[in-house]
Image (tube, rainbow, N blue to C red):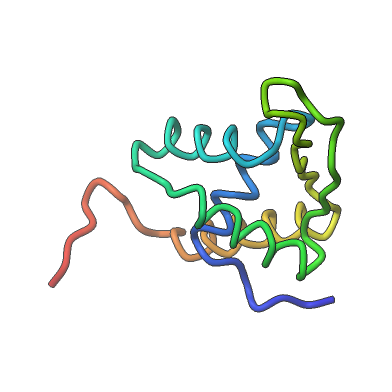
Length: 110
């Protein structure tokens, strides 16, 4: 299955899932992105992106056991699928190729 490439936010969500491993679900994904990027992220944006990534086959999700602290509601956990890992690697390689020969410290607009 070929993909057009990942958007920046899709990459951030997939990378957060990769970092969180078995603890990947909505709130920790938001917190991981905010902690690592220093920017505010809405939960709604993460949930919409997770649904889109699942539709693309890049992640899968399942409901965990209901928890008392959530009033008996179950959490929807997310897992990075092999196609998602491949898409992340491709995005990284593409960016690396584009950066070749450029020094970020001396980069300026003309």
